[in-house]
Image (cartoon, rainbow, N blue to C red; front, top):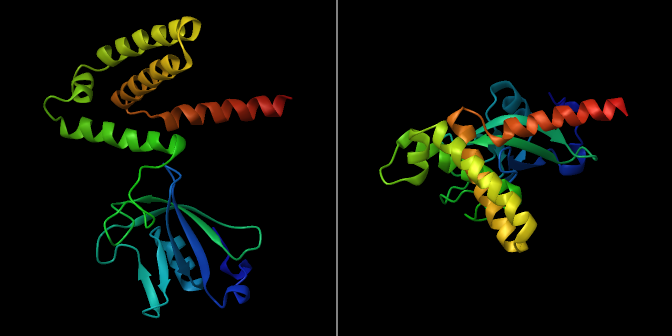
Length: 207
């Protein structure tokens, strides 16, 4: 929890910029402004609130559209005059209907994996016909497990005898099928990362 009294309100004339970031994709969704009341409401309700400089009032994200931000965590920067607000968005962030207020492109870098996971989850829920992912999930865990085994062997072979581009392609196949397998067991790469982080912390303590 942030103590609003510790923020540098005088430097920003009573309003503090709030950078909103998708906790899954790490994509910046928008920039808003908060006053002390908006900060308090955001922490109390778990739903992100802003201060509208145009309407001169507090407003909750999604109060008319339903496209809310669920608060994960909030942290001030080193000067206490900017907030980083990590959220789980429900629907598009922008009033224009785009994923972010900066456009509709998928998250860059490894953030794209979260976008891909959302597609896999959607296939699992909707069970569309003529869907490769849907077919894998329908025959889970055996079929996706078989594919992970096959792709793992192909990655190893490509590492030894193929070009870098071939290795990258085989690694992409492996990661994709691993994500499908994890989804079939109600897991994700986030769970894998959590294990890696825990192991890293233990080894760092033992040094």
